Length: 371
Image (cartoon, rainbow, N blue to C red; front, side, top):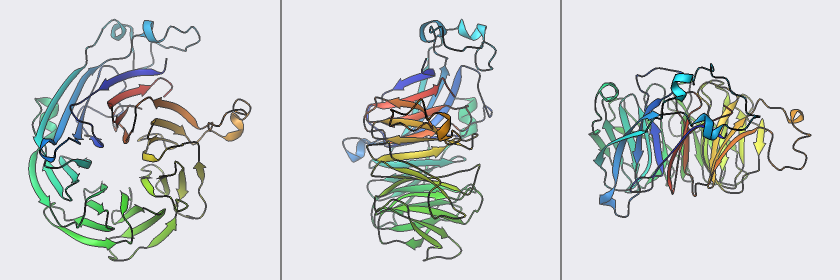
């Protein structure tokens, strides 16, 4: 069987971006049924038809063992911690709840941090909202409440990230990076690049340091204590736009980069010369990438045709004989395909090896059977 769990969702409008919400239901969850919270931004036909949505998904059960794991060669342990005889006897019907607030303009990107939601609009504005996460975990969903709309950018953008301390940085298509104050009601133009900023990632262990990926293949490392200049500049993309960056929370010297030509790489920031690994098997642009929250060697990458889970601890010689006639790298563990124009994929921070992706045809929530 390919999946332990799989749920497909289709909204009224497509979505370019979503983000999981850290909930109060516990860490490292493996027991079914699962429940989760997410914030979702729409791309509607008209600016006034868009909305910022909060989703609550619950009663997400394991796929039926008899229907989906009937291969005699499949290994199965009923005591594996995320399945039991009593659970297998229950046929769960997933429950979907949705609360929303109107949002003028399509949402290019949405991120959240401890009850603060930030959206990047195609109108060129960044809007902040608050939400009662604890209340939504114990009671009904509530619509986010508007906090502040920032119009200081000169163009729209996609790059947006919260630091571990909750500092918000946004980058636009004119190369400007703005950093917000702690109350989210003011921001300062901190850095200016020559080219559009495609993605931003704060350092997981240095609260003043962030990385920016640009069109043209360059990545820059900035420190907000030294405005208006880059501490380090590196050509990562061989002149191809850097669409996605991923800074490892577990091995903090590792930075991943995904490019418009379909290549993606992992870099050691202590050297930052040649990549530790480079993968060239993708034939469409890399659209997002993210490290596993608890496995330091694993990450997920999306391109226009699907989501791909890699394990960098797999050595080439271990599977060389089995892959002599294959163009697929041995580090590739799992492929979720069939969704046109996949734009983002994220690991759930609290449900072990659970993923969610957004594509033109909707959302997919799944747990691969081999993770």
